[in-house]
Image 1: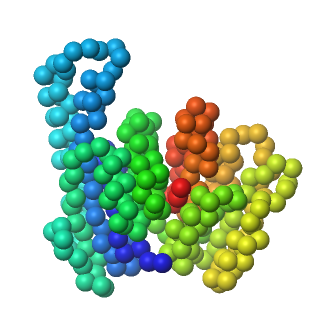
Image 2: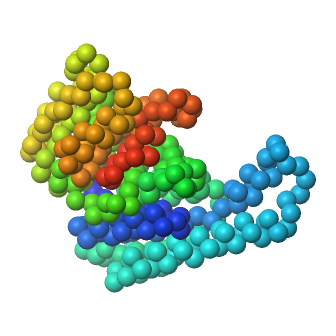
Image 3: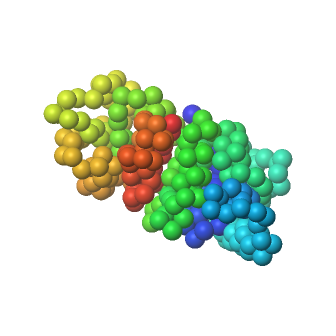
Length: 288
């Protein structure tokens, strides 16, 4: 499997700069096409008009203010794209790079972020989004979930602190689920570069997670050095237990399945996926 087409979602917030930096970091390792995508949306206007606490037409000054905010985010996103892609060949839409070349294109779309991100993501090998922050949690988690649920592709969640995708020591949070299996498959290009792989399982009573022997075998067949970390569930949130292991291991990439439970359940009760999205300090490759 190769990663020759990257979709970098640049929403214009300061943390989205990390997305483009990570995409360029990957482009330095192997030739690829990087599409920088910004989506302008009337979602805020629609949400305002649909609010149960408001009836009647939206005041013109509010519409103007919301549109100005969208325009400012677009200008910020385009500036991030141009600064971080400086020095790389710039292609117009429809043009493709040479096989041995990394190049960039700017994609300026209008519509609902969920629809645009998922639709464009389906024709790329990997989607990069920023790790949601508390300040922009609603919009940024919406982008991440659009990529995860509806693209059918692996999604790289990029924190502001770690934009150089080294992937020398890779951690895999393993559970015997289709989502976890898909995340490992999506991570093949990163595993090709890995020098060490640590498999983390969080289990009750020390019972071994199903499927782990087959996973070890498949990784060893790739020539990888594999170790197992059996984390006995201590009652803390599973996401915290996984991230504690990742930090102790000093791994530089985490691979895990996303939303093994329903999204609604995680929204109401919390869950590992949302905990990882909030707190991971290393890049996380997820698949659903």
